Length: 366
Image (tube, rainbow, N blue to C red; front, side, top):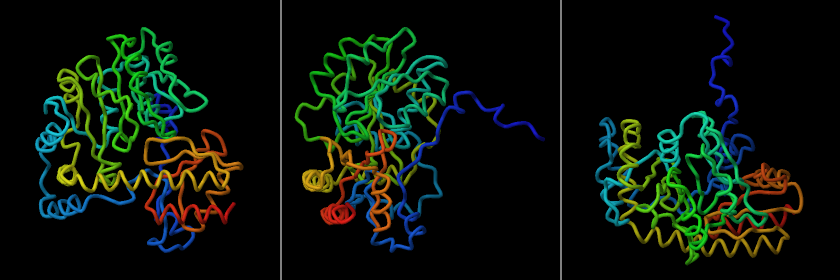
């Protein structure tokens, strides 16, 4: 059978470049023979403090039950989220990370040929998901200082627009949309457009005037997507959630895959929500690390852009690829942002020790 497989692939899929994650620790170990325990990974925006000890214990307790399917809807976790967010359980849906919530929303509301508007640079998954379902991606560039141009978003809306995605705080730039900006924007968006607010990094925000989409859940066609991958340290378990009006959640539930979140992930997330002290500790570590790294990197002549997340977008004076390679040989991983320009890289805020090691090694490399 010599049929050319490419001729059988959907046209939208042919346009997709596979998502390339940050380089894993194991790969650096294989490439350079480095001791895994001494490798510092500051590339994938993970919580450097790890998961809550309560979550780890919950995972261990699950070991004897993993031959059972999980509770399909995630009843107990949704109830816990409902209590914390002060929003009814029927307005909540669980997903395999917040990215599945975004995917389910796009699959539910976008027909082939209709448009999805999103910022650029931003999370690469938005374009991949749009092309996967045959939608037309419409990119809106951030301003020169990486702030949002929400007026340009409004200008891009056409009769074919079905979904607008706002990544807030935005990855990889770390900037946010402010209250007054979002209020003006929401007034202008037509009622036949779904707004996805990707708030994966919301817990790290320090600004008082952060424009969360949460207050608009009952006023507009809004779904807020959040995750346990970041501040809760459960990236390896892939679990997140979405909050929206009951009618919206009802349609998403129609296509949610059965058992899309695992028993282990649900139990770990429940325990993580109970450990407020771990969250507070993670926020404090991030705040202190952000100021330490920003000042240390700026002293080395590296431009650091303001951030409200757990990472810092940097612009080096020279090609960042050479610097990244030299750091890797020293056991330190940061993320190339070559798509934005050869001088750009993104650095996850680590522990105090990891941040110190990065600055010291960068000083020697430069």
